[in-house]
Image 1: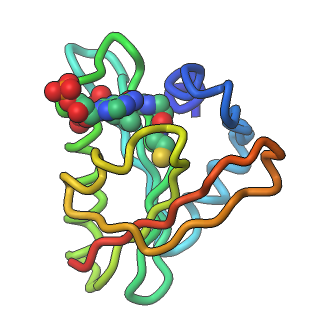
Image 2 (image 1 turned 180 degrees about the vertical axis):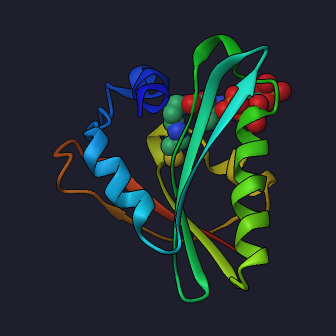
Image 3 (image 1 turned 135 degrees about the vertical axis):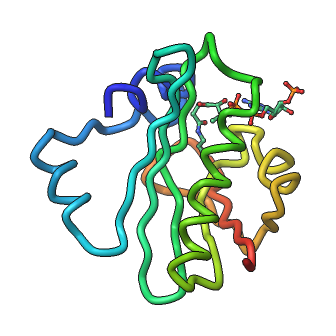
Amino acid sequence: MRIAVAAYETTAWLAPLPPLTAAEVLAFLAQRGNASFIARCDGNDVGTISSAREGRVVQLFRLGVVVPFRRRGIGERLVCEVEETARGEGAAVVYLQTYRELGLIEYYERLGYRVDGEQSDPSQGRGLVRIDMLKVL
Ligand SMILES: CC(C)(COP(=O)(O)OP(=O)(O)OC[C@H]1O[C@@H](n2cnc3c(N)ncnc32)[C@H](O)[C@@H]1OP(=O)(O)O)[C@@H](O)C(=O)NCCC(=O)NCCS
């Protein structure tokens, strides 16, 4: 959670990440099909991603890499880790949500995801567009 909050500081203008308590993290991880991964580089914890599986569909979320370690392929590696785990558990689809304003659609497209829908997000109140993307494994 500490890594995710640090990584999302650069996107706080859009949607600050609501931190979970340690108890909430433990409750999340205790549920079958849920997982979180941490990327370590040179002895530092530098990135994280979480996932939740329901049947054959996995959602990935809370992907973040801290600024000094960005653009080294760590984000991609984290996404791949979720996909490999999902495959191993018999999942057929990985799904994620992003905001058009984050400029990450092409990033996810390069990783094999395609846009599956979009809608304005009233909870943000600033005309932001939430994008659904998915990848068939
Ligand atoms: C998105 C994020 C996880 C990418 O992590 P990363 O480790 O830097 O990504 P990778 O090294 O795998 O990929 C780098 C490539 O992705 C693209 N990319 C990465 N971040 C980008 C951004 N913010 N905007 C546009 N392109 C981006 C670039 O093409 C980059 O390649 P380049 O360096 O050759 O230009 C990281 O920027 C981050 O933590 N952002 C804040 C949190 C966030 O927005 N999470 C995703 C919510 S849906």
